[in-house]
Image (cartoon, rainbow, N blue to C red; front, side):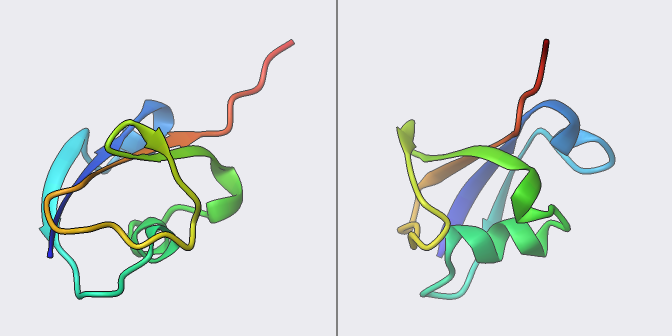
Length: 74
């Protein structure tokens, strides 16, 4: 299935801003995150088609997955 993955903030460093990739059926959000070399503990928000999602969700053909890092401040 073809999924558009969008990365934000420092997740783009040495990666990409947006990319369309092929993934096998049953691939979870966490599988995609780990496949990009991103530590799931650093992820703050994930969204499929602009709606919050969980790591165990399986995107569908043509979905857009957005991955945002944890944000700190103070």
